[in-house]
Image (cartoon, helix red, strand yellow):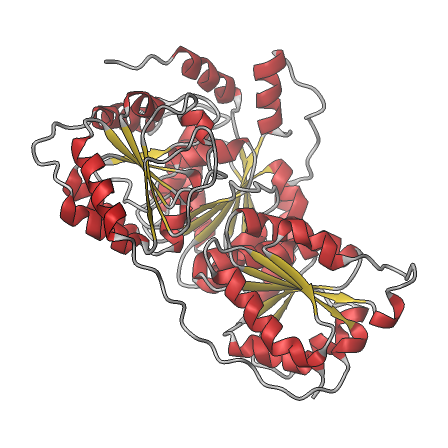
Amino acid sequence: MNTAELLVQCLESEGVEYIFGLPGEENIQLLEAIRHSSIQFITTRHEQGAAFMADVYGRLTGKAGVCLSTLGPGATNLMTGVADANLDCAPLVAITGQVGTDRMYAGSHQYLDLVAMFAPVTKWSTQIVRPGNTPEIVRKAFRIAQSEKSGAVHIDLPENVAAMEVEGKPIPLRPNTMTDPAPKSIRQAAEVISRAENPLILVGNGVIRARASKALTLFATELNIPVANTFMGKGVIPYKHPLALWAVGLQQRDYINCGFDKADLVIAVGYDLVEYSPKKWNPEGNIPIIHIAELAAEVDSSYIPEVEVLGDISEALNQILLHANRKEKADPYALGLRDEIRADYERYAEDQGFPIKPQKLIYDLRSVMGRKDIVISDVGAHKMWMARHYHCDHPNTCLISNGFAAMGIAIPGAIAAKMVHPDRKVVAVTGDGGFMMNMQELETATRVGTPFVTLIFNDGGYGLIEWKQNIKFNQSTFVKFNNPDFVKLAESMGLIGYRISAVDELIPTLKIALDQSVPTIIDCPVDYRENMLFTQWAGELNCYI
């Protein structure tokens, strides 16, 4: 048995189902070992797509997604998706091929110090130098990747080490034990919550990672505390719940900011600062905060918790609920915002404007998708509207990259989502800019049999940057481009393409597209004049007393 074969045995022991990647000269030993294993190798068209697939697989399952590249340019292509997984706290293990150790001392063809290169964008980056260490390295890699805060890990395998003979076997898996929160912190949190007149719960992606949404919903319901979620915390509490205030995180003021302005306590549960800077909702650092998470809060002048409750999130919420008492408290101020938030959402239901307003486009998409169906949002102007207007009943049914926020994630992510949940409908929501970054993976989707819909918000430019330029300079520059005929492009790849020419075509087209047995593309013109209209409205927003 050689090192590559032992490494693959270790991956099988970790429960790896898929490896996403590209073949290369320096990883052929590993590819041959995979060929004889139970693991399915998914050949992608770009290493970035492979990393995004592993990223979304990890986010949906909680198990590390695995991606593979060769050395040099293959590894540099992989980095964007690896960095995205790391900042979005998605468990991922990246494996790279490498030149032999006998060539590293010189300026060898395609050689880069990949361990050093991946170190800033991973939790741990290492190289297998001694074949006998392979089981320990693999077990450590998965343990680190899947431990809170979950993220990316990198293993570099030189080609001569991969071919070396070795004896060994995988290290058995042991379940991770979760620490119970300290009773003292439970009592302190309960006392602060019981005193608060206008508390507000801020939910982050950590609640989804901890599978604590049921506990959070019960906690909020019993204590009558309204809940706002970050972009990555969607679905923790069902959006139709009377305490749900939907998403916070836009770079401009919105109704929910009025809730933060009036709050005398923010209970941050599973919240990461990278999801939405506390300087946006607590700029003076004067709102009292309770931090409930598995790990201690990061240091930030706008995020200084009065109480930290650390450990199992569900257990923390359940225990605080037993000790807190809010039965004599009036409804918090933020509850009054819900009617305005919902009315603003509903007013686009019958809008007949064309090109279609982003609010209407998302309203219609939401009406077609089931409660557990999945949308993957790419990054761009549409992401802001998806965050504000696409609402969820369940966690991980609207995936938004908002840590690293990398364009091009939607199509590869949709492939992974369909592989994890083949029984659910999946839509990749993307701008025309993001679409062209990784549209080649639609061939991968067709080849591996993952039918989903790619819905393109077509504005002929980089809409989010145009929006930002208009806010700052009252004009835009260098953001416009030309697009191919997306319908013909789809047909040339063996897909089905549709073009929307009137607002009332969208819902029936979505329904037809979602029933196809091959991937489909819907080209939909979008009216992004709404961007600046929203900015103007946000600037004039006044909170009522």
